[in-house]
Image (cartoon, rainbow, N blue to C red; front, side):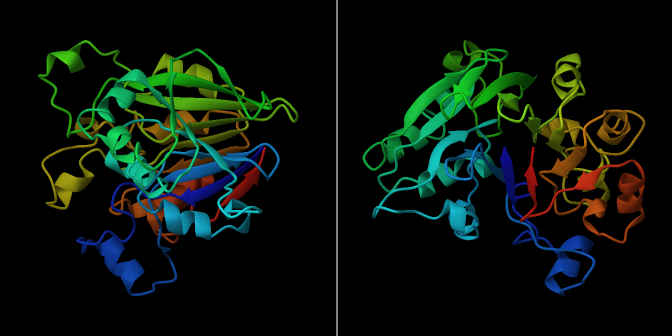
Amino acid sequence: MIIKVLGSAAGGGYPQWNCACPNCIKVRSSDSSVRARKNDSLALSPDGIRWALLNASPDICSQLEAYACLHPGPSLRDSPIEAVLLTDSELDHTTGLLQLRQGASIKVFAPRPVLFALEEDFPVRRMVEPFAKYQWVETIPEESFPLFGAKLTVCPFFLSDKPPRYICADRPSHQEQQKAWVIGYRITDHTTGGVAVYAPGIETWSQTLEQHLEDADCLFLDGTFWQGDELRALGISERDASDMGHLPVAGTNGSSNQLAHLSARHKIYIHINNTNPMLVETSPERRRLTALGIEVGFDGMELEI
């Protein structure tokens, strides 16, 4: 299984267009200790020919252009992109579906609440219908499904029941929906036996999450915030990490302490907010992660599992 990190930043990218935090200032000044990042998305393939996207970011067009193996051909409108697997209905993970609308025939996998949100509150499904032959496929937590003719098996799993902020939570139809607003994916390659897990939105370190991370070879996990009060400390927002559905990296109950004990060969943070100090490669936060055997993902990162 081939995995390419198309983007490793949280919503807004890095630098964020309206942010003058110390990190964004560093990247705009071409500081060698930081690197720019696009919105979070991965591409994976069993053979380097057929590809699936894990989330479709607003940067998807430039992300696909960055790799020759993701370019169209050999026919005029052929594309190697066959599927998109959505973890949630957040804008930074779904607006790329609008960019892929030009006559594309793509399977879009997502849990029921996400499919409903993309029909009603953020009506991507209705907007792309005149242009693209998308197949909308419901994923159910803990019910595995084949991908690429069963070369890969994908197991979705529950992460959170927190909907995006644009959802009208009082609407009865939403209250009736299943609670899997945020999921992760455990992907198994039946040729190599390799296992990768993608979970860019972790609200709590649950037993379910722990079970899916065990014995996996490669983990791509939520690295949005270093501290729970990161945005409040900078005077950006009164909301903390938990309010936004993210488990911080640091702290006694932070994800890094949990992640350090796992046996995976690659433990990688993605979906990193522009304010997170671990973006700076010379920072003490980055050194702490390196000592724990944890990597900070970056755009252009490639692995074979």
